[in-house]
Length: 312
Image 1 (cartoon, helix red, strand yellow):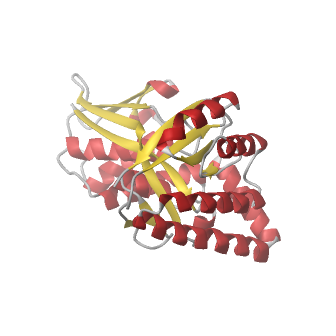
Image 2: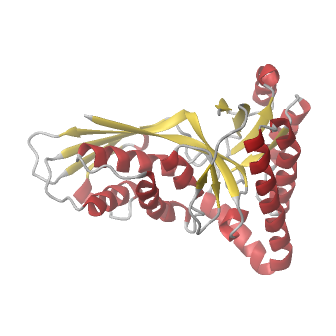
Image 3: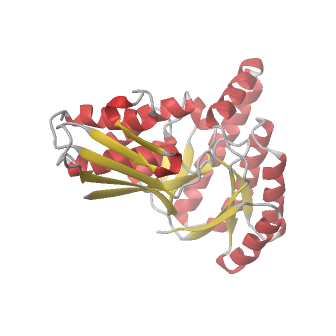
């Protein structure tokens, strides 16, 4: 058996503006992950693949699936990439602890874990760049016009400074910091949120471009602070980024409530993370007050709280 995992992710800065060529910063979240297990399947024809994904009640042969199903797509793309069609029959089992439609990179992590496990099992391991490229093709099925940041940070499993169309820049963190991720309990439909921003951009391109510029400047400033270890100064930048996202119309009443709750409980800064319209918010906290902020978020209605440490 071959097992591969891929972490979740959160975007620290740059949501939506990254689709329009501005920078974004994201980090992996190791506390949640997708796992793909590849094992030999006796008594089946050569080259056949059996897929088991209990989380979505899917048990099916690959050749019986719609080729545009995301699981079928990543398996077929991966086999094409390594140019293998004649192999002993395989079983692919997928599990994930990453909440779906919550801005934590669930779809990208599933694709990355499958591509990684499959290529390792067949003796043709791929580079992070190749795995990321395969996952990006599947992200198009999920999100329409994805930025590419999810598959990049998940495949490289490192903090990433990302500008669409440019090679991703993995960078080091100058000092560790603590983030709290709180799930609003509302689904975060990426394609709908991206479409909403697109419509606003089409009706007010000048106003949206100014917001995108502001978000990009925030991301650039934040990268310097993170590399220098000046973590507490990130808080005000998170708040400014949230103001821009709110102006783009992708926040929600519940997200706003959770953000204000975190700030009132002592967080340095807080913002939505991901597409918005639901999903998660993140709060930068001192480790000493993390438990208090977590408790406050639970009382305010957060359905799930994850504490993650970004480390040097």
